[in-house]
Image 1 (cartoon, rainbow, N blue to C red):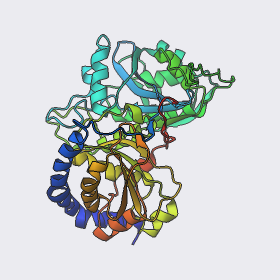
Image 2 (image 1 turned 180 degrees about the vertical axis):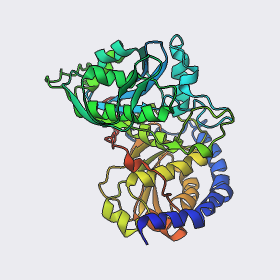
Image 3 (image 1 turned 180 degrees about the horizontal axis):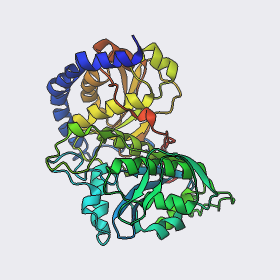
Length: 435
């Protein structure tokens, strides 16, 4: 039986089993845990915690809304700088993404309610949908976008779909297939809006365009030195333009966001909309910008470390294709149980034999031990010697986790996964005051 067939069998036979387990067992414990963890430090005045405290590094971000000549929303991206202050990531958000994230019976695509004159309102919608904090934002037209792109020569790429602009009156801009474009033509692709086709077709073209631009970074000219503050830390950019300029001065990765099947959400008006997979968006931003991930649930904040290499995954029945697949499933379970995932590391560097869990507060040891029995399987649970700001406990998944999953027969499905998305460097924690 192939690995894909095994994953399909697991979903068909025991997919409901883990749901029942979480709802009946872990959910009940987590309900108690939410109260315990949230109150564990209230009124605490005895003793002083002298342990070192680390915090996630500064990763400034910016939301860029691109419009056509009529001011209609054509493209949305979130750009994030690396801690070093140069290079970063571009996360492409579908313009027809549901602002309610699927939590309401009525779908509200971003492009249907977009108003260029109400940028704060648009930013708020994106923040709530993606569970992140946006620090800077700007609305730009074709000329404004052109000014922000790197000065590159003709770019070769393969368009997955025809580019059609029905609103601008341009008709067919370019046919699908291998093409060579100037930077001006790339802008035309991004700003084109076709009212006769679903937005997902244009979104696929946008992904390819941004990926081609990322391959051109860093720009040909030597990057400018990053301005530093008195403590030697990169100074945060003061504008979207400055942030984008610095991003092009280093390596850039492009991340797309998975969406849930349209049949899985209510859409009574049958509008052109997609719902972003909350697990995947959490994974992406917990990797590229953990300091700006918003805790939207009432439960504890968790850092996940899933550093499985290919051989380790294969030795456990090839139930997962990548560390990202392991992480995204665990994120889904934690979100289901009202937890929060603040940071995720999926670098394939190898894992320990047994899962390791470090708890920030000793008072939570018993509770986390109970949760581990249901969520993580066998684990070594200790009190952290170093505290990460904004993290209640860190889970370093080991081979015991894969064996636990194999024994109980639950895991990923054969649907599209984050393994299809270009990886981005995981952001390490830095000592408070130094990053």
